[in-house]
Length: 75
Image (tube, one colour):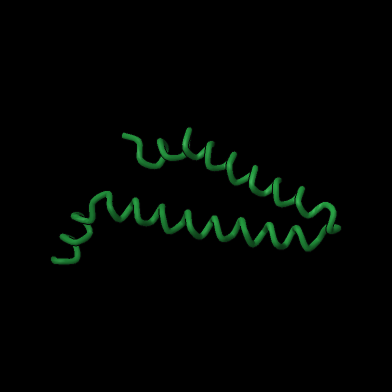
C-alpha cells in the first residue's frame, strides 16, 4: 500500500530531476564526441570540429526548448 502512495505523490519534482540528470549526461557525451572527432582529424581542423559540436549542442537545445519540453510536459 505504501508503495502505491509513494508512486502517486512523487509530483513534478522527480520529473525535473530526471531531465536535469539526463541533461548532464548528454553534455558529457557531447564533450566526449568532441574529443573523439578532434582526434580523428588533422590538428588544423580540430577547432572546426569543436565549433561544429558546440553548434550542434546549441541547436539541439533550442529545438528541445521549442518543441521537446512542450511534448514532454504539455497539458
